[in-house]
Amino acid sequence: MAVFSRATIPLLFVLVALLTVPVLIGVYVYRDARRRGMNAVLWTLIAVVAPALIGFIIYLLVRGNGPDLRCPQCQKAVMDQYAVCPHCGAKLRPVCPKCSFPVEPDWKVCPKCATPLDEAAMRHTPPLRQRDTALRNILIAIIVVPVVLIVLGVCGFIVSESMADGSCTMREATFDEYDQEQTSETVRQAVHNWLGSLEFPAERAYALRYDSFDDLGAGNEYYFLFYIPDGGHSPSTSFGIDSSLFGTTLNLRLERTGDSGSLYCVQASAEQPPEPRIVLGGRHIRCEVQVVDYNPTLFFIEPNYDQAEPGAAELPERLSVVKIVGSAMEDAAGGTDLPGSAAASENAGVVEIVDSDLMLKILSAIDRGERVPIEGIPDHDFKDGFEIIVEYRIHEDSLSHPEMARHLVFMEDGICYLIDGRVTSTVNGSAYRIMEDDFYGILEDLFQ
Image 1 (cartoon, rainbow, N blue to C red):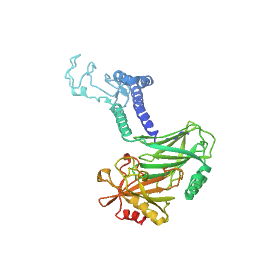
Image 2 (cartoon, rainbow, N blue to C red):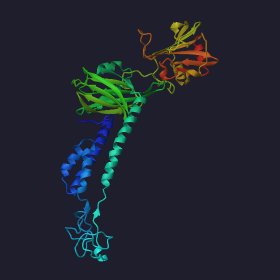
Image 3 (cartoon, helix red, strand yellow):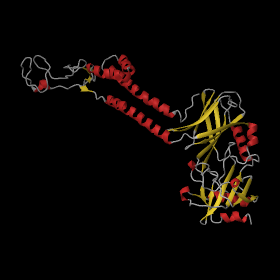
Image 4 (cartoon, rainbow, N blue to C red):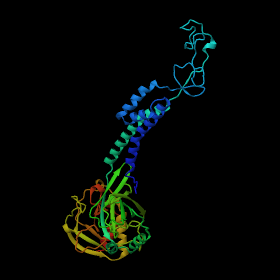
């Protein structure tokens, strides 16, 4: 079953545009040639098949020999040289009353027999010439269609150059693996309910999508959980993001294996929600997407605690504050001349936050801090500060992992600054935040 997605719309548009001109020419030539008594089928084939409009141009040159006049009385086709209509006898042009030689309306004497021409001899009803508006429309289409295609091509090139295709990550998990790794019982139950509600018609895929805006500058993130019957454990898998003038497409190509016991988790970065395009065993299949308000995948999303309510937010498994004194620190965000990790400094102590209210207070203050460009940060030479280590999930065997964030805090000219360790590249914007007035004091009180 053929399935159209946003990725096929540009191709369909171009195909329709390219076929429009030949179809219009064919219809016009057939009707015009038939009206003139010419071989309509032959001339239609010549006009359409001949390349570069050569056939159409030849027809326009040749068709002048065919009649395009109509009798004003019976509407039958007549020739320009007819004095009367052969079908109804209507007088089409003036003739000499003596020798019947065709004359012009402004002549006074017959040039053949020299008979004076009176007003009665001049009375006639000239044949009607049909207005050929179709030819005008075709000529407009011949000019407009290529121009539109060129403009769209240029616009598409500009958009594709200015708009990154985005990126995506995928992992497959069996049902058992998903249940074991999904830390939220609420999400796990919601996914099971969703799977239980599917009707499983032939040749179809299903997906849950969660939209997340990354305030740290990475852009929009879209999390898909795909269930593709007969596509589990595919020996050959390809996926990727394509962006164009007509939208963003998430392409997923799998082999048909007959295995229906897997889920595919996909994390995609793009400006707009991508449209899934699933190919299973070489055939496009429809994908039913349901947008949800929770992350159904196994990918970790760093929470934003700015608007979190006490008791409702999922807190990190561990939050530690390290006091640093005495030596210069290095930038956790990868730069130079900035404060850094405790590993490069002297630790004056470590406090693990166990009170959930205090933990939420610190985390919400971090996310509430005003992000400022690096150009707005004054030159500083400091030795003291704090490092806040946030472990959303504890990995005892790893000093650093994706489910961990390390923030550095220092004072300069009476202002508390925080370097957000979640910002790992200047492409994502500045990592600096100006914190609330009492934030530095809260951290100092931990070591009193």
